[in-house]
Length: 389
Image 1 (tube, rainbow, N blue to C red):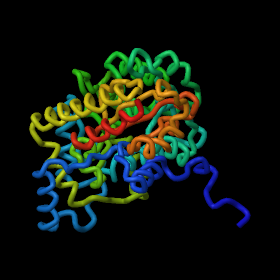
Image 2: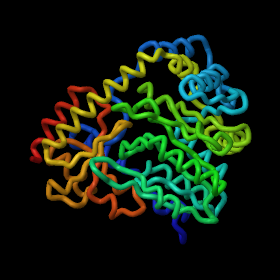
Image 3: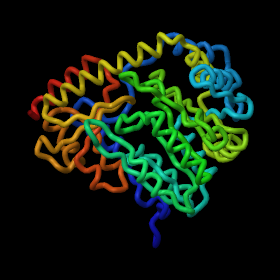
Image 4: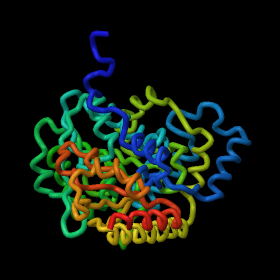
């Protein structure tokens, strides 16, 4: 073969860091605080709803392309109840195979070759691959540590917009930093999008996982944004059923139709019986969401305090499953090398943040740990990490 098999758009993407680190955890018997999935299932009544759907023959064959009506209605009701956003479940809601497919379909549908896509760096690794598959050009705007958290430089964001910019790809609450963009910050982003006639694709899968009184504000709810925003979320993180792969978008009819045009040639449809269960999950009482936040906040504090005692500098997250640390106080400068050695040194697996950056040097000393695990697992991990001190 005279040419490499992988096309040039994807040449920079190999095996994901999650696969590498999960394999390392399995090989060494280390506690896996790398990949962001819970180690317990979600609510029993939601799981039973899936079993009931299977037994009743609902969704065992191809579900409707846009998603089952019950789920689309539940999504629209959720957006109305939580955020005051009105969506027609028939024309403005699309069910996808998780948020990852929603991101891919949105970028494939909305980005032309040569268009620039602004993304907040560090970013979830699929963003870069999806921009590349669409033929777009990534333009990272870097969130930087400041006073114990990561912050967005709005001047840098404005300066990144050019005549070739097509859309801004947002993620709030933000993975991996745990930043939750404020209403004031999002208002500034919205004003920029309106001024420069930009689309916004916003990944809000951690919308219910916010702590310490932080407020999740969908940018679609701000003036001028309803018709130019594709909002993405999913059931995996909120209900602890990441393997079900049920995600969705909400958007104007025109944008929803565009995304559906791409999505139908990706998975076509997926997760039939689980869609009925997620429809019931979205109608759980507020007490469920309150308890979820309280549980994760306690686990965040447990792991964060343990990491600080082990010698890391810890950036306290306002949302998500993850806490970012700086390894330089431990005498290291290369987070990737640190993570590759950590299972042997301390019996724990983490993820190097550098893989989420275009500017690898900016993320070199930072390492991400997931706290969406059972308390006893986190206590064991903290005990092991103290060996580093």
